[in-house]
Length: 318
Image (tube, rainbow, N blue to C red):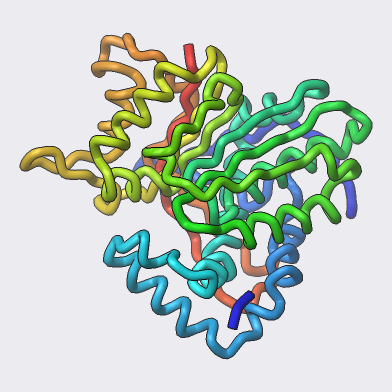
């Protein structure tokens, strides 16, 4: 089955409170990112033969059922399933991530710096949402200084082999989104980050774990804690760590006989005991319940793209 117009650069847009219930919202589009219509075009053009396949609905249903049952390894164990997921769910996530990245001042300031190479690790980012979201911000910011020497280099690590999808979407963005394609690169690493001897932490400017921590804790709780502790010891001062996950009870983990929000465990490992502020990281941006809503009047896609509700934490190494 499966195998413009420049906008003036603006300051980053912080998520604004939407109501007194604690839900924040991020804008549908950010001035610091490639337009949503162009992000969606990436999928309609690169995945045209997939979107037109009569087998696609069956693979989507299979993946959906396995994800619901938290069978994460099985859900992504073939190219057919991976392309089905990327065509169905990656577009909405890529849109939300591009707006989130473009709304967080520390990330915008990192990507708009005009000279040095910025190095990013996307953990569990094989479906390419983070890759596209970061590239959308980087390429937009470079439009006002296309001759700058700055570059963005991303390592995308995933236990499933998403290499075909990462390479296809990266090549599209290099062809159509940026004046100097050599300034944007993505290296896919097919490995388990919990057991792999990844040794570049001290070079990284940004690490993302977006909708990944639940999977890691579900598969290997002890190893996930060790991985977060590895970040504590090896990341350089000033580096950023962005974690996002579904808001609500789906993101609870069991410790002993009790259930805790996954962010409680993450905060304890990264920030130290509550109130003591003795951890190696500091929390610089956060939302416990954030909405991203699709504006269907602005984009066209053959499948419905759902709104997203999630929490996020942006940490910076002390």
